[in-house]
Image (cartoon, rainbow, N blue to C red; front, side, top):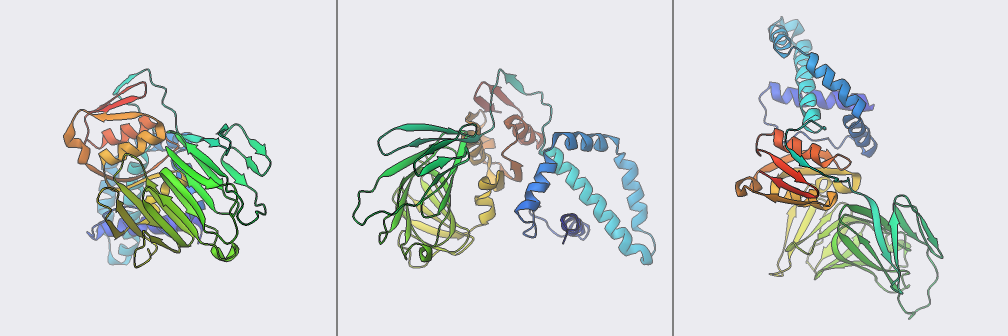
Amino acid sequence: MSRLTKILTYSKKIANSILFGKKISDIEIPKTFNEKDTEYIFSNLFNSSKVNERKKLKESIDKNAAWKHIEKSIFRSKRKKSYWKYAVAASIALLISISIIFLKKEQTSNSTLVKSNILIGSDKATLTLEDGTKIALTNTSGYNDNNIKSNGKEIIYKKREVKPKSEIKYNYLTIPRGGQFAVLLPDSTKVWLNSESQLKYPTQFIEGETRTVTLIYGEAYFDVSPASKNNGDQFKVISDSNEVTVLGTEFNIKAYNNEDIVYTTLVEGKVIVNGLNNSLQPNQQSLYNKKSKQIVVKPIDAEFETSWRKGLFRFKGKPLKEIVIVLSRWYNVDISFNNEKIKNIKFTGTLSRNQQLESILSSIKDTGFINDYKIEENNIEIK
């Protein structure tokens, strides 16, 4: 199925649901869209020249006249009923698309802006070697030394033979606020680290021993090389009293210092969290309370929880107070409220992490749930 056919088919489904009065809780990208489709859609949504073209189109549409034409069309003969049903569907889908596009794109704002230099997050990290040497890694500089090299987006460790009972040497990869980076471990396990995160890991794994890494704090997505390719050695992740034993492949752990809950989300395969009797299944999430030491498991949409790895913010019924925490880490800003009531307003939507922060704030303001916002350097007040 071509990309255009996928988009048109999904648009018809959305519009038909509206026409027949069915409830649509969320308008989401369907699973039929693969990662390349998603990248294509969002690159077109956020391309400035295409946005300007859509803006001109939007301004040229006489909505009242168009709707009257559609209304007349609805009541034509039964022979043409099916045709016009899809015409209406396509029209509604187009209007929905235009609305979503302009809700999420850069808009001019009357909000207060006082000398701001807020940058979009980028690939950057600090590598701490076993002797304490610190190396700055950025998307504009590489690094190459012995069995370690970096291309500016990830750091790669080459596998070397290590004798049993050898001393284990550890490196640390620290991601600041406003940063992200990845590491390919010597066993071919890949770890993506989100903003304000730190990972401790051995420079080489020893055969016959459990491959153990520690997420000191923050958020990380793991694509684990299976035990079958590593002499049967298991893989384990420790994070703030939370221990995850990996039985197979992809999962996400969020364990920030200022949050009471450690979240483990399974994407593929199986993991056991803190000795639970049953392993997590895909699209399940464990919530470990650091204070009470209690753990619960709930169903979750793993695509939402791990969208940051694909360059997206995806929120589903998430309170504004939680959204601003995510934004503050990625844009390296401090966000406060002068109205406590708006903290718990819930939002659902998808945005690009390559978007300017002011564009996102403007979109939130346009919903009518907040009155205004003020930006002064790296401090933002939501009113």
